[in-house]
Amino acid sequence: MTDTAAAPDAAPVRLSPGDPAPDFTLPDADGNPVALSAHRGRRVIVYCYPAALTPGCTTQAVDFTAAAGELAEAGLDIIGISPDPPAKLLRFREKEQLGITLVSDVDKSVLTAYGAFGPKKLYGKEVIGVIRSTFVIDAEGRIEKAAYNVKATGHVAKLRRDLGLG
Image (cartoon, rainbow, N blue to C red; front, side, top):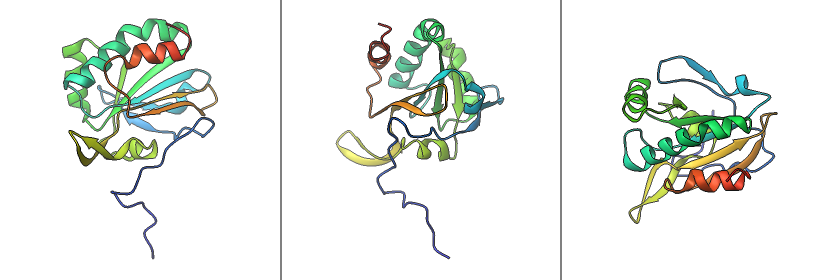
């Protein structure tokens, strides 16, 4: 029997507009299941970030929270995915007063399916980890936009402009 899984150091798959968004059901900060399929009929921003309670990830989550009302009015839901366990996501949500859905992908299977886990540069060295990425998924569950290696600071403002909201 051969192993068909990609080697951990292999380049991750990259999603492109028109690709079906990998479906998932992951626990949120309260341990409740969140399914991407439950959002059919609405557009969804799925953003992947390395670690709760770190400066860049906090900036990004706070920015998404600040924009959540405007994004919801435009028909967009927000789901943030990290490999943090639900208890850490709960501390993050409470400490930063976040008003967005954060889900836990401890085994990194969903992050990998989105091409958001694999080799990346960190301080000039190649490491394996979460690649900060953002996806806009259309109402039918297809990738509308896919952005890899995004910057934490200013990303939400750029996304709003790209979506014609800012």
